[in-house]
Amino acid sequence: MKKLKTIFFVVVILSFINGCSTMKDVSNTVKDSLFNYEKVKPWQRGELAKEDMQLVDDGMMTYADDHIYFSKEAATGGKGVGGGGCGCN
Amino acid sequence: MKSIQKKLALASCTLLAHGVPSSVSAEEGEDWALDASLLHYAEDERITVNKFIGTLNTNVSESDKVKVDLVFDTMSGSTPSGALEGAGSIATISTPSGAGGFSSSTGSTAVANFEDTRLGVSLDWEHTKKRVHRINYGTSISVEKDFTSFGLNTNYAQDTSSRIVTYSAGVAVTFDSVRRSSGGTPEPLAEYGQGRTLGEGARVTVDTIFGVTRVLNRRTLGQINVSTGFNDGYLTDPYKLISRTRLIDINNPSLGFDETATYYENRPSSRQRSSVYTSMAHTTRHDNVLHMSYRYYWDDWDVVSNTLDFRLKFRYESGFFIEPHFRLYNQTAANFYLFSIDQAIYGVSGFPEYASADYRLDEFDATTYGVNFGKNFPGKGKLRIRLEQIEWNYANSLFDTNNALVVQVSYKVLFE
Image (cartoon, rainbow over all chains, first blue to last red; front, side, top):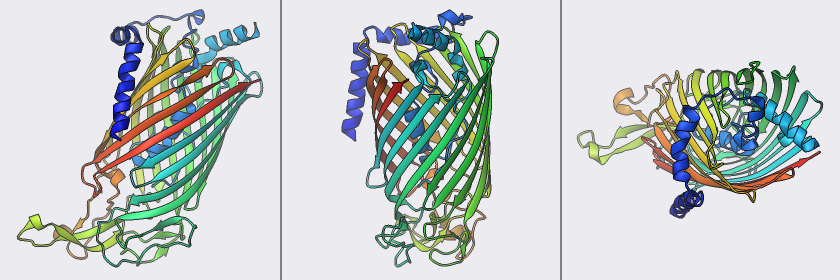
């Protein structure tokens, strides 16, 4: 398991390096996302239309996570309602 | 040209999909989308789950979409029962070979073995009216050897005329039936292996959600949901146990304690849950995508939790992507959680009204870290692979840590 943790952090570091000025990107994110309100026109929504920008962008991952965490944690819900339950152990 | 028209239509209408969390969508304007996934979940020397998930989305008309989900799980391994180790010669809940359910393999009741399968099917239908109103109806059924669930849900979303804001509301009702694989449920707080076997446990769950999704700017979406839920009925776990303990030497507590008896647990028959959930998706200046969410949860069992989730997707022109993922979770213990029924407090035969030693009701924190990667095939599909590690640290439970490895491979095919 320690190997996996090491791999994770190596991947994170490499991803950031590979993303060129990604650290600057991250620092700009707070300013761009939270303090930059604008009335977006329909023709300005090209980026928002991409699948990656959906708030649930990968239904398979979300579905699996919901099952895992529902079966392991006392807190549930928040994203939506519906779906089948399980008698998880 | 047709493709461009579809993308433009999607660009102007995509917000419709945000307000209703369980909305259906045939991505990228294609008529059909088939998504299939295999997941392997393995805890250290505990539970192993192999899961298949299949989802089919289709546009049945200009204003109607249908989604069908199929889930099949196989689950096996062992799980902490709540009782302490070294319980001595206690009868086991044995089941016919291969029939599933729990059994004690070592004479100790601390860990119980189990084996089960689960089949789940759900169906969703979404109807769009005048481009700004959307309503979704869904139903689901899930069957295991010791558990059956049937649910109905509906969600409604409405955009403002500018389509900057989407308001949504949803309600779901779920009917569950719980039993041991050998049938029935144990009498609460009866001694393990003794007491009466009662009928199946039934419970009803009603969940509601209200949400607001807003376009913050041309690269950022934000959402806030307020949820409440109510469970009524059998909320006890028919397999979980709790031990009665006494100090080995009352004058020398450092010698520890031993177990004098083992009982089935007992939980309240109702639960009121609430949460506030916020999430954000943002495309950075270098075309990477950040997903962040935070949930604050509380209930009348006195469980309070915080969940923070963070993903940053690095996208490349070749269609390849890599996405580190980090999640933090913590919770307080339920107000009836006990490590054991302490003889010094409850005597040799007294009981609290409710008692559970289920590790999931203990105070604990959990950390998930991992990475998703894959490749987009524009107009054709998408391959995703994820590798994650989950670590739990419990405050009081007999087994104070747990680890799990999650491997998931998914592939989506788009076709007309």
